[in-house]
Image (tube, rainbow, N blue to C red; front, side):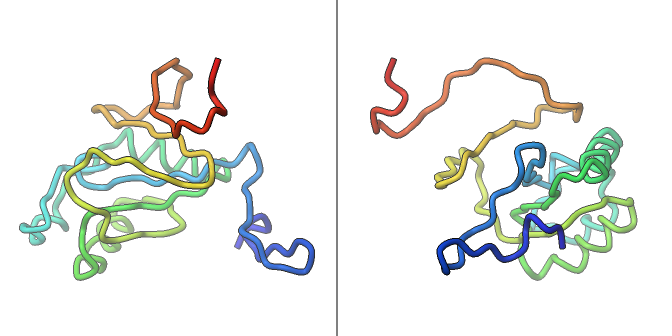
Length: 144
């Protein structure tokens, strides 16, 4: 395990680790993002889904650069074995696999850590900076 993910103690109490600024913690969807969009109702197709080659190249590059890669999928726990077999068959490097993401999209992630959301729109590349409008809590912190 990376040193920055190990148990951290401040003032005698355990606290959550914080990644260094140069390490990103990527949560990556599977169906329709790194491969064909396979619904949970058709698990027999999961082992034969076509991989998106640019996703494989980009994610493995990010892994090799030291970033954390975790797949976060709406597939259920009963699909874990098929999913792991498929990921290994295609050579994806990753740190974790989280099953049971809520289905339906329109996600609004609330967290006490900075969250950056990137919508996949058909092509994996290195990320670029863009100015966008976001929703935030009305806590006065972002008032102009």
